[in-house]
Length: 522
Image 1 (cartoon, helix red, strand yellow):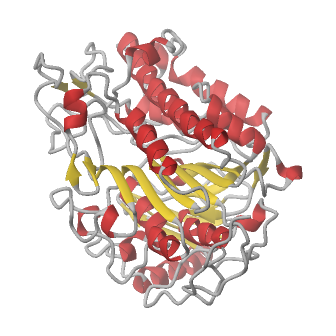
Image 2 (cartoon, rainbow, N blue to C red):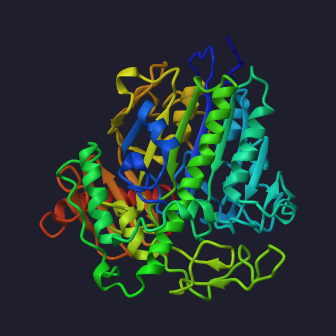
């Protein structure tokens, strides 16, 4: 049996054989995209993990990429976690990151993929991943990447863009899996590892391999209206949602499919999006199969989630940055046509597009709104948890309705590693905001969850507070809306006009949190 010294950063409980941890996050995907959450997209690997593990139905993230990632790495709400309230400002120097805690507990700490928590111009800056607790880091700092040639690709601060220059078959999601396997393989079998796989799928641009796109040819001819209906019906049939989850109306920015003028182009956008997701799932499968072949799988805690809801952004012809380029990198120097231009079919590197309002509305079935918003469509995420050695057998393939949030990820992993005890964390002056949810599905000794004071959000086009089943939420800094999520989980009946006292009560909680965490709403 593997034994390891656990350092006293936290009050500890004994763990004779700490688990390996494989943590997987995808980028800009909707609640109903995965097969195991009602989608038609082919995700057999994630579906299999869900079938032998559990699916969370009440898990929240932030409404954009970097705020969620900041909470993952620090266990804090995002505006506290970063020094300048933004991704390029870097992680707060007083915070202790998840990999830093796990390093001290004897773990090998490994990362492959998107960081988005420091300045890309400073690959060896103090907030770079390999300077904040990761023994190995391969990936990108930018929030978006060309899938065929990431502009800021690095290995522990060293530029490795030669990889895609030297390899005409380079694809970023494949490389993330390649390095994940390589990093794990280099860890001695007696040492536990924390592997963070941070995919950029399915964030724009819509880049995918031709053979993956081909799998979806013609699948979306029915359009987004029927797709939403079909997903909604599957979600009900599998027990993921019940009758209280009424299907939200089609978003006002989305035309009825019958009157859509560019159906062929719109179909292609969703075909490429789905191809990105299926490729990611295949790459996750490569890592899972490696773990099985190396004998490490049974004692590996695997968690998969999204970083925010489906992204409605219609990519413009003028939007460019250091992550983009003018010409393809295949040697032919074909001009890249940026923007959602009807008739220009996405997929190859010569395009730079997104899938837009219509398909994002379908991705977020049955919820309202999107990324950047704190309505459910922007902040509700799937979470799959698998741990063959410690999963409660009675829960295999089932659902966990426990109310949880991305700030809970750090305490959950530290609980599994045996270095967490609620209320006794010595991480000062920034104590953890979340709590472990390990005991909701695992048989290992874990700390029990307690009723929480509330959950809070304030970023981009949203602000919100949830206390038990009540949610106060605002769109674009407008007036508050009030919902009873126990009766109206898709936020269709605003009760604020009928319950001003409840609005005032919850607004007071939000104001207190806002002051405590020094959130600046501008």
